[in-house]
Length: 146
Image (tube, rainbow, N blue to C red; front, side):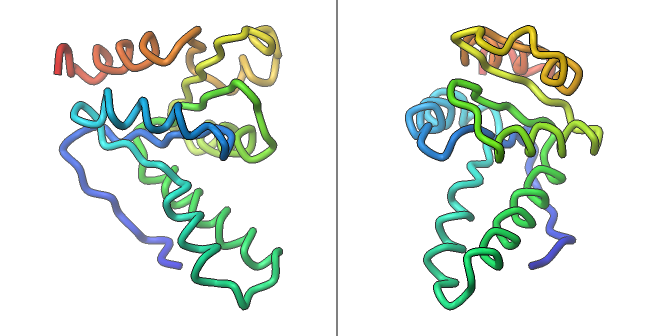
């Protein structure tokens, strides 16, 4: 895998983190905010890796997926994590992005983990819904009313 991959975009690049089964969240973000931002859905790459590398062991596939996700995160301006049903992968993505000085934003509708010290320490801001998060990002990146 090319670790020197560079994603070019005139729009801010946002990595969409979250449970692999949160398809409605990803679809909503892409449909509503895809014109304002370059949204990266890592599952597109994950599905290709799984489909194309069926001769690899599960551990080898896991390494390829993690490496791919890290490259995509490194090419992003920020990471937005939908935290309805957190997984180890989502938590690791947040931690990785934060430690690489990539801003991390959390969408947490149920507020179950809003006082978790590790999550508070490794996120730049926590939002109660998707629209609040992306409206904030529009303002942050000077993309009002796009």
